[in-house]
Image (cartoon, rainbow, N blue to C red; front, side, top):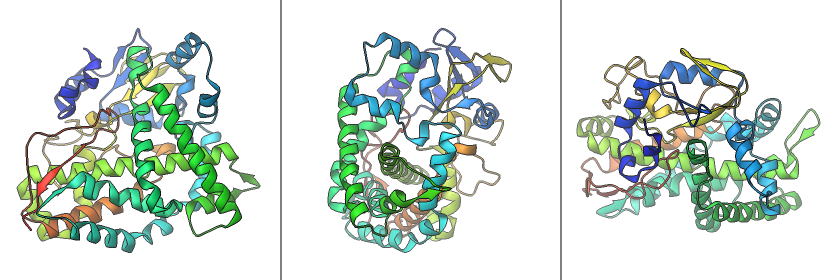
Length: 405
């Protein structure tokens, strides 16, 4: 099976038939036996639960081979390799950093944002005309503004941050794992990462002089048993929170609106009863998740089903395939916001369960309920859709709708 089809733009609009074929053959060993592709729900969950399924990509044989082939790591890139965000770390480093960040990213702080999210959503929908681009006019500005405000980033700076973020998300795609070669555009991504780092370095310096009621200020002061974030850890964490704090939610909101428009009966149910929004969001997370796959590294020989995955192998977890596993969900390809006994892995599982899941859920619930209530007659302008180049964070570039308002 040619898994490079994942990178085919023609597949991106509907990768689920491909995912189904991979799931039927899962687990698959490819890449000369150094990459395992896992697509069944139970197998994906087992890997996410395994203490030796590592998040540090530098531990993989594929990464070590690519690093050995490179002449050297350029000075401008070294900080990114040596100080990755805690998204790509394992205990004890991951535990320490996440605990420090969690002090500033509490559930109480997130819930207090609900009125702000509702107000921002109302303002965005008020500004919509008879035709709107859901991606550009709702799905992007809402979570980007919220995470910028939470971090203490001036709203006027968000266009630049959005551009850098869009470049960086391409690094999440498993191109190196499946081809053995780094993806094109590495220098472009490193330039964006450097600019991101320099931006937050200036912001951190300002917050140290003049702290505010924001996450950057809180992170500079966060302490646990005398432990604090180093300067490099603080910068990596700020970049991670800004990027992860909006990119995935953009896809969640846009995918949700698209699924509702394609299922008028479900759309009408939500428009008539906004209380269905939590269930609608969970079904979108299952049916068309914003994060299509995760990557782990086998820290020892791992048993996945009847397959032994050798130590050092990359493990690609096709979460989007797992959440449509017919062994777990009846009629898994059917979109149903009233589905019960719903299970998905859209936010991961275990120690790396998405720290921003409560915020993403609130933003998507508010956005989908408000859109359905405000524009119950909305319909897509065209059935032909364009998607970003991203495989991991698969999302629309645009979703034009006639609002009917």
